[in-house]
Image (cartoon, rainbow, N blue to C red):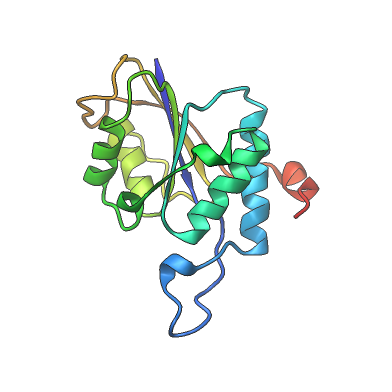
Length: 173
């Protein structure tokens, strides 16, 4: 059995000048608290991730570092993929299919609308648009990441920071 987790990055600061690129946008204070909250919620599940892959955008990298530290995943093992920035669902599927079959629990941190569409496509379950730091859990009952087709994953759960106001309010930046 394999588990795929799709996490949208935390809330980002707006573009600060006409010269700033979207990729350079940082997490806002709210976004950092969202990442901490979801790291805590995930850590409580006692699931050990084999791999975390994130987009090259600064806000996704910051989300990944905060999340990884909270679950004791070595930040030196974070994989940054240029394929996730402005990815479409087919590119996300190709990225998933390229994963090593020994890695059973994978987290991908990226952007909307691609992650929401990928979650729906892979599971045939509509959870709507992922909110910032929204996390979907999809389960694959096969032993290989190869040959992903629509609906092959079972949708297990959607979680997001506002579901856990007590945990969110306890997080200190």
